[in-house]
Length: 222
Image 1 (cartoon, rainbow, N blue to C red):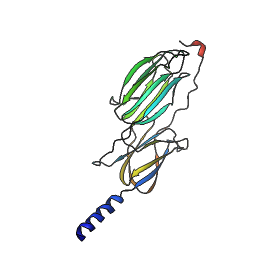
Image 2: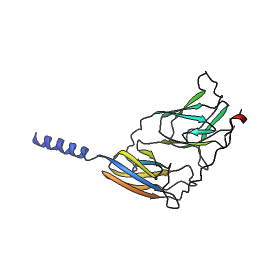
Image 3: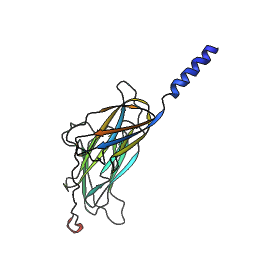
Image 4: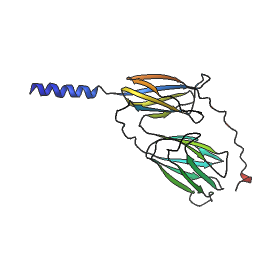
């Protein structure tokens, strides 16, 4: 009986040893400056189980010739509603960005312009594959947006100071993945040993493009 009690106590101790930690990641651009709007994803080491993230419902609007927000981070299995707030038609196309091979969720549809007093034209898509998705509009080529679908619950975007804070990360070996809309090639993953409070600096070869000034003339749209 005493042996069983000691065994149970040891099991409880081993389970309690796996604590939730907070991981702070600072991402730097090629020039050494903080890199905002970078996606940070933590994944368990090879062979470790990955808990399914909790899906959410998220809305991206099209307004004044822009996707808002320009970058969305959602867990895999989430649904995104696209809504057209402009008075003219828009197109929504989503697929793998740049030179990446197909593999992420892809979709394509057209949204009618908004009419005052009528429900906002919208359409919803299910994001059941992990990875980045680039958004575009065939009718207005200057429109660009991105969605990153995270495969784990431990993901965040960097703020204007290049810092992302990821809470509730299990202690132990993890792989850190960085993605940014302006990257030219995939960034190598970084091995991280997660402790109760973990801080990581990640230099990259990514140099963000200067924001484009959107020319908006409501009188010349269709």
